[in-house]
Image (cartoon, rainbow, N blue to C red; front, side, top):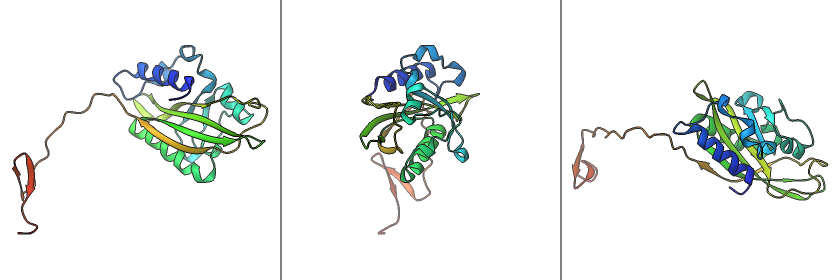
Length: 193
């Protein structure tokens, strides 16, 4: 994670969740992440509506030179990247894992802008498929930020942030009728017999 806001939000989220897959939305205290708050957002997990913003920090809104509340997050992305970002959000919510990604865009004057995206699941009454908490932060703050909106976003490389929830106990799988264990390996009878 390159950006300070990304690291701060992830550390806070990770501390709040403890051994659970995700913290409850009601456990997130804005004053505890005040330095990252301007780069922070919360999305409704609603694929039909394009995962609209419930809350967007001031720097996130400044990137697009407008208020983003209730606007579709997916529609901020270039057409060939919108499907990928929708799939990433689906994985975040359904699998209860976070994702950090590189994002690129261009300003009105054609200048490139590199950003970092963090998306984390938030639980609501134990379900992690209702809200997504994240940051969208420019790696370097250009002089024109807030004056000229950036264009459509493009997804770069990304990685998933695994869960530290307690794993289920491993259970041995039953052997098939044509299988036997030999020297610690499962051997299946048949094939070239």
